[in-house]
Image (tube, rainbow, N blue to C red):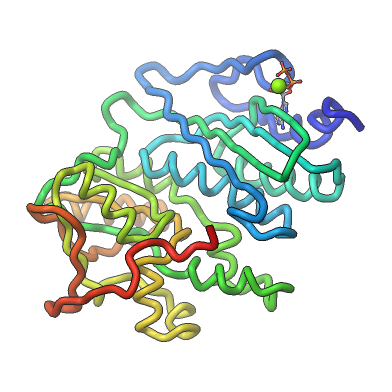
Length: 317
Ligand code: ADP
Ligand code: MG
């Protein structure tokens, strides 16, 4: 099997027919059009074996995470996913690995309505780069710079689960592949439908990849304001609290990364509409604080000052 057989066998099937596709895999470059009045939104992320995922991580899990980290960036812009390219560097040709990787990538791309339109295939240490392209009506993207003092700090879903899942993922063999906390780390659910639904309602957004405090800090920096977070209001799953206890669950929610939930700035008078739109796409929203004048992110526990143990991310990077 040469490079061209490999592409034809494993990746051509991911070239789903989607609106706007003019020319996909096979030519010197891909071509597509976007709906009139929409801007192209582009993001790229690389996963390196031994750096971003453990050696011998299952290929389906590599694919799920690769798709999720990119789709989450599109979600945080309020963009509709459209096309992707894949740069694949492989130490050797392993048909079983490739088949499992391509199948899981196909499932993730199809679920997002995305088509794989091209890529590059090289030999070297296992490294995977996905470039995701989406679109958003001009002027409606959810950037990091739109929060204003008085806006509410709103998060989707629950936080901290993926940090507990990371501990489970590092224990090999996996004790229970179906554990919901492990699943949060292995196959995160990017909030694509939510990001699109909140265009025009949220003022700013970011996805939680490095941890809530770190990522919320990017919004406050870009928006030139501060934020106050009430740790008593953090959305924590029952599974997380049962596994690690409330105190650690709070620390994981504040500083553990990889949750791929959205943190949003929502004006108080738009909260009801935001909640209704979120319900329509099946995602719960929780208000955890507010943006304030000043700088930085401060935490309190129902009014008392709360100093988190860690503010950065607790990753194996
Ligand atoms: P070129 O030499 O012009 O870069 P390549 O031989 O690298 O062409 O690739 C041939 C075609 O296959 C191109 O359309 C390219 O986009 C596509 N392709 C290469 N690798 C991949 C991959 N891993 N996934 C999807 N498409 C790929
Ligand atoms: Mg090439």
